[in-house]
Amino acid sequence: MNRLIKNVTGWLEDFQFNRALGELHNFIWHDLCDMYIEEIKYRLYGKDQTSGGAAFTLGQVMLTTIKLLAPFVPHFAEEVYQTTFSALEKQPSIHLTKWPEADDSAIDESAERLGEITNLIISALRQFKSTRKMALNTEIPELTIYTADLKLCEQLKEIVDDVAGTMQVKEIKITSEKPEIEERLVSVEPNFAKLGQRLRGDLKLVAEILRQANPEELSKQLRSGKITIEMPDKVIELNSDELKITKETVRRGHRVEVINLTEPAITLLVPLSGLGKK
Image (cartoon, rainbow, N blue to C red; front, side):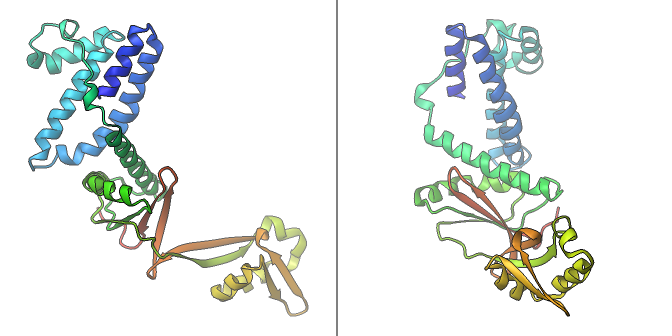
């Protein structure tokens, strides 16, 4: 918040009004509404001592944001102020309140970076649920967060509650030990669009042979980039780009979804068994 105050104030003093408004837009739309409010809902609705602190902080953030918006949308800012904050500020108008001042000593780049990482992890889990057409409040029984960065591994322990509370994760494990995972072949099908003209009448038989074949044997053949199929009267070779190959990732014998974040290098592992609880 202090960085926002500093940046917006600086742009206004330099008469860069478009940049000041752009900074506010990005903060309100992306940081505040899309991420922060979603990330503290579990605390706001909770009954422990952190719920009051979360509500107070959110109120201060909203009041400061409205003050920064006031030069651009004066009537809107005044309406929000009168209905929500006037009793607290003891001023008849938002335009008579003190302009927010940034506290440079409170700007913590390390904390900001950790907040960005929290957002990245939560966004990745949101996308995971959305892709599988799962409600956002669907419980994830277990989540493993892996990074080889030992310092980051320790820092990630600070965000466990926020990730778990926001994304309904029952248990989170953070580790610097690389998880043992393997890819397993599920099925191989001919690409009808590519093979239709070449195989013609043999295509259906080839598809059936592939369907009944041992996945482990097919996997061994695919390492060479092709699969050899023995027909009653001939031998057919299929290149990997002529096939539709379906694989799954397995950890400790169970299917998992692997989500890789590149900056920083973090891997999320979500077991696919047990999903679907509310």
